[in-house]
Image (cartoon, rainbow, N blue to C red; front, side, top):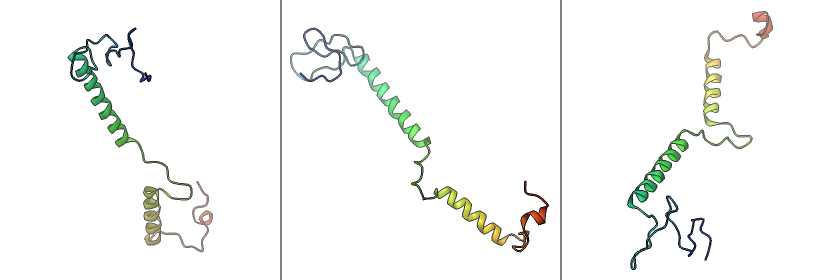
Length: 107
């Protein structure tokens, strides 16, 4: 019998997936996985909660870092906007004047 990670009793029968307790199996039909209906419900709620947590974490987690040599699309938009602003800015320093000459120092 393959080890599926579920606890088994001395006769080799699998226990309840929620509490590990003994399960009385019916003579016919599907094999039971839980000893009580309440344990089945609690297991379902735990799985549903975990699924919602995983989805929330996935929604909040930042995207994977870009591949080396590629710029992040957000950063690329910021840089492009800054370059465009600097090209159109009326207060743009003259390209022939060094920044240290214009302000006196770099801070």
